[in-house]
Image (spheres, rainbow, N blue to C red):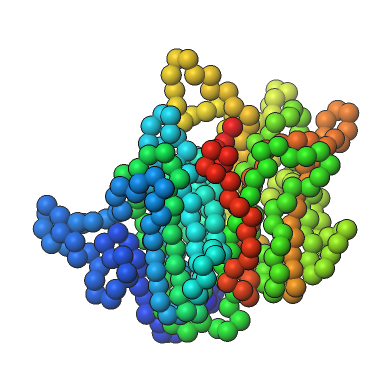
Length: 365
């Protein structure tokens, strides 16, 4: 169930394939599509969850036994009114493994799928795929030994009229050394000069770091991408074991990602299996009226998957990102608005997470 190589696909390994969605909330065998509609029995009678009220937490999956979640698909409207247009930041996705009361995943729904700023964008990568219109897909394997529970909390002001989802999984024995999937969201609305932004810390145990999503809102002029990504491993103190050469380098780009025509710089977005720059905007496209100034600070979304090159740690890991820019005067310390999602596997089913900020503090500028 955990061998993702194409060469292993013909091998008959066994297992019990199941799926949970709005019509089969428990993933029961032989119980899919039982709800009736105006077209009759088993004709798309209950394809989604309806009327999720503000403050409510709904259980998307409650699986008993051992197995692996193999695919998650979600779609939902991105706003309920022009005044309430950040649904993707207001819904909180959480995952719990093996009966733990504290989550191993706690991320705003959109950011988990590399769609920060409350806006969807097309993402074409190996573990995360987002296709028009807001078809959110995750292929990270998520093993569990005793149970798995996935919840969605509505911190939006209004009810969510319809929430569509499907969770595909396979029941069966998993290896004893299978790690637990984790993902954590953080944000500093204004970073401090000369102090590195913290992507992840307080993680103790054995595991591997497998990905970063960055939602960067630049608040100062000039080039922003000279900050180095640092990985402090297994007791590193003042200096990290792994230190990159710049933000755009970490996400696979070079020379500012941009093309230059007529003395002007043009942003170039891209998506590849393991790294990408899928989103750029400097105008508010969520609402429009004649009194609305749509200028916003430039927003950029990036992903980097450490799948061929996971970052292993034996005792602990801490990850940081500098805010350094450069201009005609040389390099300088910046202050920007930075939000991230860290993705990793750990030999324990949870770690202590910092308190998730309230919905309004998560909204984009």
